[in-house]
Image (cartoon, rainbow, N blue to C red; front, top):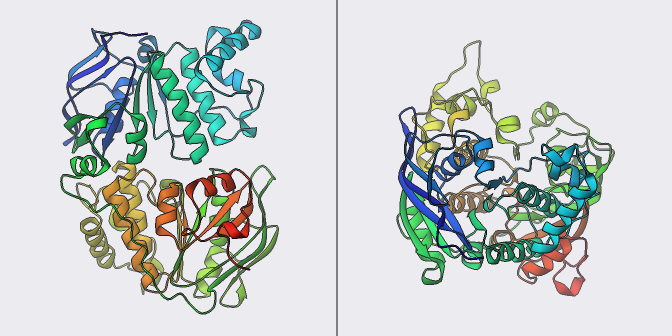
Length: 511
């Protein structure tokens, strides 16, 4: 299928939120039969722009053209009618329903012939190369399978224009390769696809063109085959950026600072999320944790921090088992442990409070008397805004009004400034642009140089292999191995993430 008409044309789109200009005269176009990558730093206006195509926001000025026709999109329903489908990073599925039920939910087929719906689902899956079991419950699915359901769901509704937000963020290399094959089939079938991503190597691998936004404006649109990662980074940031992640050689502590032995933890569904997990963490090292989403990473972090109870096992810090102590008891023991959770606003920060008061949450108990001294927290907030380039009107701005990337910077900066002995980081650069990500990597290396023991849970395997001194791989709550990243490949790690234990000669630690 070929079509010379643009699937999407955005002309001089402007969108303001109060005094903040999210988009300023943004223009881009997407052809049928091509994949356009949309790049930009945090706060550059990518999500706002796509939300206008999805009908969540409405532009203040400018024009949206779909299939060569000037169009007004006032709601998600209008967007669906125009055959636009958006696949969000956080899936919108009902866990207790099957794949087929999620796909047809809300359509006429939901109460009509299930046989007819199943035939249509099979036709879509076969046509694009999807692998799907229509009768499988969502709660039994891998992340890749859930994403497949989301994509088929919008195709079932007739979408020919697809927007994917960070589609590979939680996929293994093998799952990413499968997704790219499907997207290539969709491109050949004449679909128009927009991918929002921060992974520049994937931009080069899958896209035909790239549109770069900076500070709400279109900087450039370039053909992928005529550019490279360094040029794209410079367009995003506005200056050259060193792309090499440092892994400085530091002397780690003679003895482990931290032991986890035979840790077993049940999750909210009373299913084992961690099964006999054991590892050691040394001062002056970064231990990476790799695994597909839902492999026990969150439960590991929360159990170490005292937020979740374990069924059995030991967590030993400075010779004392802290497993069944509360977070307050752990603090009273003088254990300096910082935890950067996945859920920033739900667990890490208070959304309605400003930046300065969120700094205060970590230190208010140290105040003497009835009056809390806010001056140190204000000074710390000012320091972090400058150092981490946090985009905010002021330190008095509620964190709920910041972009996701800037919320992360507030939390990470606060935790690091508390001078921890152990730093537990869960996805610290999730959603951050490349410039901000490198700032965080440098901060983690600074902590490592100070002798801090760093546990780094990440989703970008390239980063894990470059940044970390050792890598522990989890699959379904079990340790598949702890390896030297200098001696294994990304594909090796990906196979371990899928449940294959690596042989020692392939790079595993000597026990």
